[in-house]
Length: 120
Image: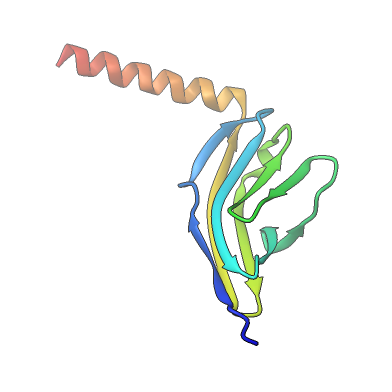
């Protein structure tokens, strides 16, 4: 009797992104592997476990880390690690959480750039 094993792979995941404080952070990755891999999420090398602010939803094809009501301190790299008997794979993405004052500053500079572009 033969058992087929395929190393786990992260097929795709998001580019670095920014959210405003209070918004949920959702990081979804497409994954594969036989047998289905064990899924582990990390923040600054600390293991994330489901709880009050964290949810992890995993199917055979995707895994999603949800961080509820983000705070500026949630700004960091998040790493997904997949493991099965055939191997392992990782994916890392930078997430930035900005406060309302930072958002207003960004919007102001974007407005100023648009006005100077129109004048040119």
